[in-house]
Amino acid sequence: MFRSLIRQFVLKQTADQADWLIGDGLFR
Image (cartoon, rainbow, N blue to C red; front, side, top):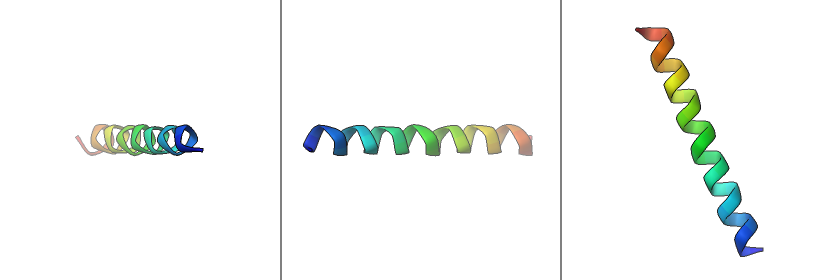
């Protein structure tokens, strides 16, 4: 269970970062 929590957290962080990078690219 603990491992899946870490995996979920990492995936969320990666998704947030991808959204931020895409958004940053659009607004330039």
